[in-house]
Image 1 (cartoon, helix red, strand yellow):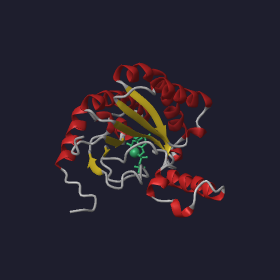
Image 2 (tube, helix red, strand yellow):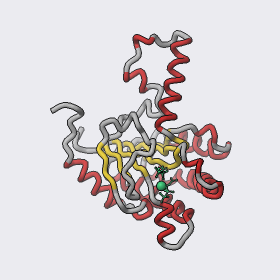
Image 3 (cartoon, protein in one colour):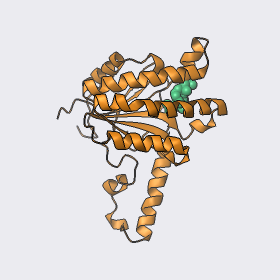
Image 4 (cartoon, protein in one colour):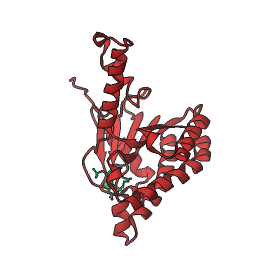
Length: 234
Ligand code: IPE
Ligand code: IPE
Ligand code: MG
């Protein structure tokens, strides 16, 4: 295993709206083009040897947006789920999600479950969409479920450590994030993968998500390889 390679890459795909607005178009056009970029980056990531690609698609805070934009995003999600099977099967991609998807409508939930089931034996890369995901929400629901298990004597408080806690996270079967990329110029984490990014390397791009290319992904990986990770050691 090459320690200098980011096995788990997570991306905050930001800037769809500003990109579209800068072209005199509606924000939703940015989301539509952004969804095409997701396909290109998925294929590129497989070719580059990334094993886990996790994409911030809709946050627990994004519900604050105007109803019309949310409606567009939900419709886009629905059509994208329907279209993804061939892409994932052709490229050996196993699909999964993190976040509370219970709030989505039945057809979206069914689409997610079917896609997970159909792609579950694919081995090249695991693609995870963060849907209605928030890091604080993830940690809170983990604490609640853990407390339930203590109450019902399934778990002893003294047996609890970081590894036990991780089992209650959405990412229980995934490694921590190695490389976290954010497009769109902002330099913040916006409630994404708070626990899992504890020692992630951050690479920021000023360009907007619809402009992001596989070559940019390679640039980020090159930057990652130049970093010296110490994890608190010397
Ligand atoms: C990211 O792009 C996509 C989502 C959050 C759904 P934005 O929609 O945040 O675009 P900007 O940041 O407003 O330009
Ligand atoms: C983060 O982008 C969420 C996603 C990319 C899905 P936001 O646009 O919601 O983040 P803020 O509001 O700039 O922090
Ligand atoms: Mg944004």
